[in-house]
Length: 116
Image 1 (cartoon, helix red, strand yellow):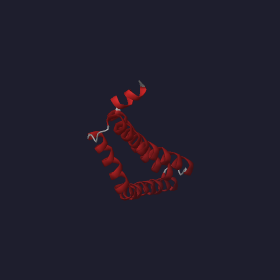
Image 2 (image 1 turned 60 degrees about the vertical axis):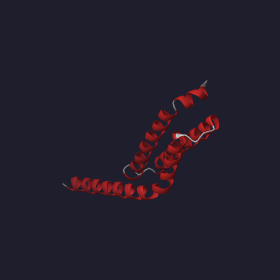
Image 3 (image 1 turned 120 degrees about the vertical axis):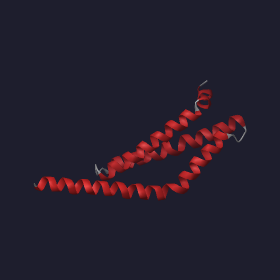
Image 4 (image 1 turned 90 degrees about the vertical axis):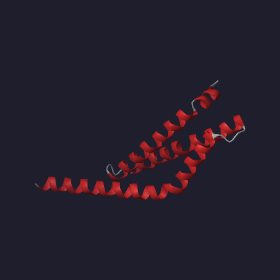
């Protein structure tokens, strides 16, 4: 019964895991640059990676194993994972650069406020 529920709600599970992965990604950079916490950075990096790939790949394998067909779900998963693997590093660099700039501005503004 539980396995059938996975297939029934596979699109919702896919969407939820993607949202969780992106939230973890943004929090990962927040922890690194605002909180300056290496531990929280590493934990949320692991959460982002696990929620970004494990549910996708697991559902794709199980879906194919059950249906024995290449359907739109399997193609969508392959696209998500493929785009993620290929485009993640350039996106990560841009995102990290932007967040680093914001954190630096915040620090400069905070230092200015303490000088007054």
